[in-house]
Image (cartoon, rainbow, N blue to C red; front, side, top):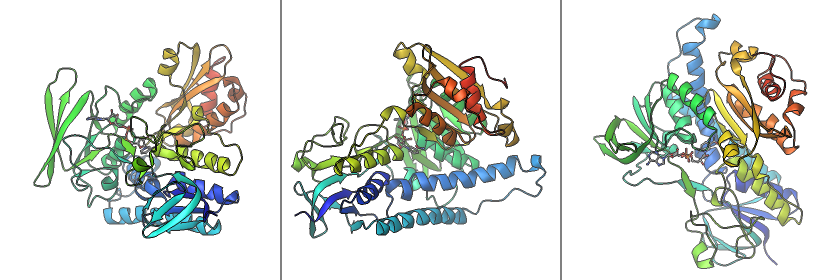
Length: 462
Ligand code: NAI
C-alpha cells in the first residue's frame, strides 16, 4: 500500500492550498518543499512582500502629498530602509508560519528537501523514497532570462533582488512594463528613485483592456515613472557597480541607452520544472515549457498531475489555488472545476487596476455586439474624499442579452471591487442585475453600480 494518498511537490499557493483541501477530504497528504519556509514564491519573494512595500511606500506618498491638505501638519517621514525591509520580512514570517500551523492542524506531512520523481508513484527527497497513489507537481515558475542581460541580483535584479536591495537606488531601469515591473517600479519611484520603464510593445501591460492601459500609463507618468515604449532591450552591462541598458526602438531601429544604479528585469516568468526527472519519465510538455495536462490536470503518465504556473494559463497565485482545490476534489472522487472565464487579474499599484472577463479588444475581435458602461471615479464622493478620483469602472455587457462579459477597473480598491463582478459573472448576471442591487452610500462600490447603470438608462452622478 502506498505510504501517502497524495504527495504534492511545491508549497506555493497552488501546492499548499491543494494539500489542505486534500487533507480536509480525508486523503493522507504530504508536501515536498526545499525552501526553508512554506508559501513558495508568492509568500516568500513575490505577492506578499511586494504588497508590504507597496503599502509602506503608499503611506509615504500620502504623507508627502495629502497630509497637509487634510490639516495633518508636520514634516513628511523619512525612509528607514532597514526598518522597512524588517517590516516586510515580519509580514512574510507571519504568513509562512501561518501555513506551517495549517499543515499541523490538517496533519499534512512536510517532507523537507527538493523532490524528484524516479518512477511513477515514487518521490525521492534526499536519501528517502516515499510512495504515493497520486503525485501533484506544483513547482511554480522562475524569472525568464533575457539575452544580453545577466542577472547578479545586486545591480541587475529580478523581482527577488528588487525586494531586498541594500538601499533605495537613485535611479532604476525596469525592463518590461508588465505587472512586476510596474508594481516594483512604483514602489521605488515613491521612495525617491528615478524610474524608467523600457517596454518592447507599444503599450504597457500587454493583454489589458486598451482604454484602461492608456489611463494607467497616464496616471503612472504623472506619478513620475518614465516610459520608453516600442523598445527592445539589447543588453545590460555593469561597470563599477553601475549599469547601462542598451535598447533599440522598433519603429526605426535607432539605438539608445540608459544608465542606472539598479536594473530590474521583469520580462515574464517560465515554468519551473527542472530537476524533477520529467524527461526520463516521458512526461509530455507544451512547446513553451509547460507540463501538458488534460482538463483534469492529469499528465500523460498515470498518477502524475500538475497545476499552477507549471501548466498553461495565467501565472497567478489564485489560478493555482483554484486548480489545487479542484484537483483535490477530483483525487477524492468528487467533481472539481475551474472557470477560466472568470479569473480576475489585479495590479496593486495606487490606484489599483483590476480586470475580469473579456477586454473590449477581444470582443471586437470576436465580432460580438456589446455595450460599454463607464463611470469615472470623479463622480464618486468617497473616492474624492481620499484623493483617489482618478480612473473609472468600465463594464462590458452583451448588447442583446445585457449579460456581463467583462469589467475593467482603475481606481481605489479596484482589486476588491472586481469581485462583485466576478460573483455576478459566475451567476450569469446582467448589467441590470448589478444596477438594481442596492449599494451602500458612500462606497467605492457605487462606481460599479453606476457603470452598470451606464449600460442601461444612464448613471446618476455623471
Ligand atoms: P509580464 O508578462 O506581465 O510582462 C513582461 C513584459 O516585458 C511584457 O510587457 C513584455 O512585452 C516585456 N518584454 C519582454 N521582453 C522585452 C525586452 N527585450 N525589452 C523590453 N520589454 C520586454 O511579466 P512580469 O511582469 O515579469 O510578471 C511575470 C508573471 O508574474 C506574470 O504572469 C504576472 O501575471 C505574474 N505576477 C502577477 C502579479 C499580480 O497578479 N499582481 C504580481 C507579480 C507578478
